[in-house]
Structures are given as C-alpha cells and as structure tokens.
Amino acid sequence: MIARPLPKTGLPAMLTGTGQRMLGGVPDGLEGQALARLLDKPPANGDGTGGPLIYIAQDAGRIEAIQRSLAFFAPHIDTLVLPAWDCLAYDRVSPNIDVAARRAAALARLEPQAAHALPPVLLTTANAVLQKFPDPQAIAGRSLTATAGGVFDRERLIDWLEKNGFARTPTVRDVGEYAVRGGIVDLYAPGTGTPLRLDFFGDTLESIRPFDPADQRTTGLMPTITLAPASEIAIDEGSIERFRHNYRSAFGAVTDEDALYAAISEGRRFAGMEHWLPFFHERLTDLLEIFPRSPVILDPLLPETLAERQARIADHYQARREAMGQDSGGSSIGGASYKPIPPDTLFIMENEWATRLADRAAVYLSPFVPTDSDSRNSHDLGGRTGRSFAAERAAGNINVFDVLATHIGELRNDGRKVILAAWSDGAADRMAHVLADHGIEPVVPVASFAGAGDLGPGATGLAVLPLESGFVTDELAVIGDQDILGDRLVRSPSRRK
Image (cartoon, rainbow, N blue to C red; front, side):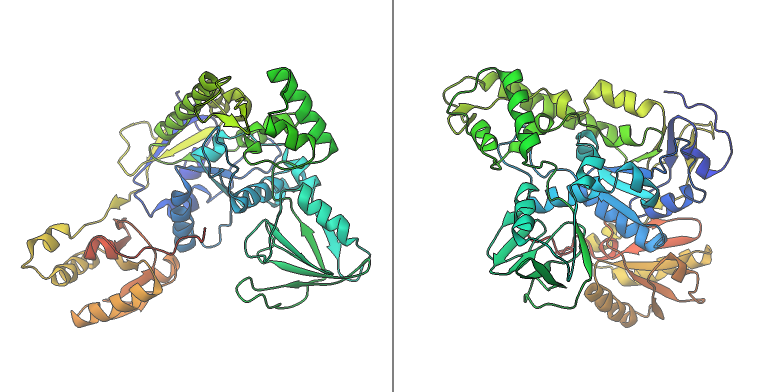
C-alpha cells in the first residue's frame, strides 16, 4: 500500500494520515526513544475517541523489553498492556487465571467513556491483537464497588466472584483468586495491585485491608474499592441462555454426553469454555475496531508473525473439524466430540486484518536503514547495532576489557556519551568493580537517558537495562554486558507460575 502524503513534516507526522511507513535505524533497545520521538506531538486521531498509540509486539517478551526501553528513554510515558491468552487456539484448557484477569482488567479500561484517561501507549502482542473480545463497556459494567463501614452482603460478594471468573482457594496469592474464612473474604482482583482482606460483621463491611500475599499480613486500610471481573465471561442467566441458544444453533441437538453444554446449563464454569467466547455475547469486537484511526507501531517481522499465527489457527480449526464425530483420537470433551467454532468468529483472519489496517497510519520499525528514498514514507532514526566483543573473547589471548577501554575512548572522541548496560543491580555492582580493576573509571550510575547528559568528561555511565545487544546513535552508545561477557547464565527472574 502506498501511503498518502503526510500533512506535515517531522517524525510525529508519521502517525498522521493513512498508509504504511518505515522507521528504520531502531535496533533492539532503542524502541523507547523511537516512541518518545513519535509522540513528541500527540497523534491526531480525529475520531474523538482519544485512542492511544497502539504498539503491536511479536510476543510478551518483546513487550517487557519495550517497557524497559521506555522506562530508560521516556519514563514519563505511561503504558497499558493488553495480553493474549496463554493457551493454544481450540485448546481444551482455559487461559491461566492470572492472564485472563489481567486481560479482562485491560479490556475494561478500553470502554469509550474512559478512553480519554488511557495512557498514550497501548502495548499488545500479535496473538492478542488478532483475538476478538466482548464489548469493553459490558466488562466495565460488571465491576463491583464496596465501601468500608457500609451495608454489604457477604454472600452477594461471593456470588459475584463466582460469576466473574474468580477461583476459590484456601489461600490467596495470585490475581483472580479468593478465599473465605468465616466473616473474612480475601480476594485478589485485577488492577488492585495487591490482594485485599474484607472483614464482615453481619451485613456490614467493617474494613478493607491490603495484605502481603507472602506472609498474609495486612498493611493498611482502604476506604473503598472497585473490583473488576477476572474473566471475559460472566456465568449469569443471560449468558447461559445465550450460550445454549448459540450452541444448539451451530451444532444441532445436544446429547447428555456433552459436558461443556451441561456445565454451562447448570451455571458452572468449564475448562476451556473461553474457546466458545462468541456464544456468550451478542457480538465481539477487536482493538482496531474500537480505535479505528489510532496509529499502530509494528515490530520488525510482525507481518510474518501474524501470518504464521493465522495459519496455525486455521490448521487447529481444520484438525478439530476433521476429528468431529470420531469416538476416539483425543478430540472429545467429556465423551462428546470437540465442536469448534469458525476461526473468523473469534479471531481476525487475513482479509479482515488487511481491512482493519488500511485506513490508519501503520509504522513498521526496523533495525536497518530504510531504502525508500521518499522521506514521507520512511525515516532513519539513526540507531545502529553496537559492537560485540565476541571475536576478542574467542581469541583467548586478548583481554576483552582492554579492548573495551579503547573502544570507549573512541566513542567519546566521536562525541558520544557511553553507558554500560547490566541485566540487574547485582550485575551492575560486579561490572563496576571489574571496570575499575581495568582502569575504566569513573563509572557513574545513571537511571535514565536524561542522566547520560549529566555525565562529565571521561565518565562512563552504568545503567540497569537488560539488553541482548547494545546500540549506538549519533549522541549515545550503550554497550550491553552480554556484548562484553557473552551468553549469560542468569536472566531476569521469571514470573511465578
């Protein structure tokens, strides 16, 4: 697609008009500066939604990397993350309750009346942007507000938790869980940031206290709370009847062996029921439909990632279709065959994706220099992948830190500020000692890109900024500890499963 001429010049102009553009010179780690430059002036959406800039990353790991880059280059830019389900298309299991809860909480914030209060950047993934979801206004409308000292029925709260996707557990530790002990209800709702302990006396909610999930000790008092649903599906009278009607319309008569249909009919949640999400709602929407003119930023290789995801969805659907009606083969649900819904009812497939992308500005990031000579359609941010010291490490008879010291001197002579990026506070502390032992000093801790400007002559910055590899721009050089030391044995701590 050829982009229409831009109404104004400069990097922020890439977010206006329609069509596809290329922003080159953005190696890994420099995405934060790219977003800050693009958002130098607010994008003119023109649709009255106040929609955010939508960044579509390849996967959740890339989202974390972009958040780290933003925290370094533009800590003033807030983000909202819309995650994808962590299960396969047409799976027999539900998404992890923590993932489902975080997704539902993010969707609730997308409802039109709250759009003006959204952060300027919405981060999502290829999988998440292809997946349709219920009307965010309906999800937000299922929220529940409680005030300490007011009349509030404990049984009403428990009923709401059950209908809105919370899992009852002996002890609350993760988002989407709740526990009941007499007049005390512990719960961890998405968006609260901490689990809460609600103490009831009769029909009065006496207190609301945050508590630490590690030691279960309360840490203060809260006057009021608003609880968001932990699931995109509410099991209530309306959704049950809607599911039953849609299921029979799609698949005909239902047998007693269909455990999914039986569970929903009885008001019980069923493992994997999310894969029939359209049957529970009047209609589904998607992120690009909600914000029809919001510009999008796309990761390198994102078109290939999206096409692969769409092909995999189609393959899984076809496999389920072929297995329908078979008595064996692992495709059954409680004795009845797995009855898949068409892909385009739950996912954005190829043709619909092209339509969604056509009438907005779409900026593709690339680490390479753009080849398009038309400056209206491309721009070079000027970043390049930094030097790796792999050859010196492999030589065996070369002190890599001596080479590093020489390289830092050359960068400074070219007028660049130099920052060494470590994966963690501990790694930064060790690196500072090693650098001092090799005469690379003074080393000054820096927390952000702004701090690099305060580095004095001869000083080297040291930041906690996990990078796979470093990069250079006209004004800055960031050298990753992995560039110097090679493959690491320790990564950032993973989320607890």
